[in-house]
Length: 182
Image (cartoon, rainbow, N blue to C red; front, side, top):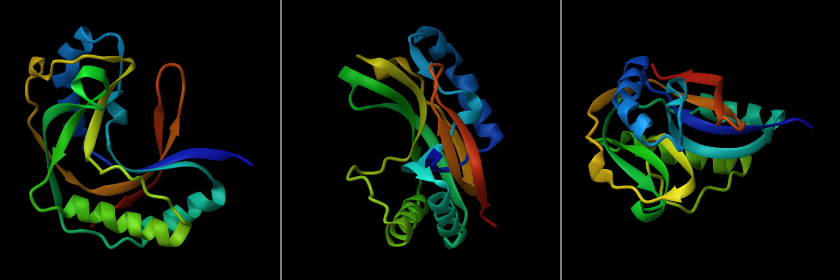
């Protein structure tokens, strides 16, 4: 039985992806030992689902299709941060801020629907909306003061069911189904 490594994501506009990529060019040169996310792969992860077979992927699609579409969710992308901590950084990311909690509410609605419809086991970690920029194979001490603030805004226009294919050159992401917000 073929399974796909799947997750749910909020897509970003081409304009914001271009802006993030151009902003990060100098940092890409400085941190050459990091695996930087390709411009077309920039997104906000909502839920990681793991390896799913076709029938479960279809059920997830039904869940997403039936999620009540939110009002305009405008996000602000500003500061750079890292996981798990500065002394042992594995992931560099841009924080996603919002003024009205619409994105957080949408995240919770998706989670509740996944739990009830496909027996999804939610993460116990607090969800931190972010855009991953780079990953380090070996933990690295990072001084975040080195980075200039990024300043960008975007409107979340869709929620996507994504597939992640892992390779030595880094993951590649593919949209299995896009659910536009009207």
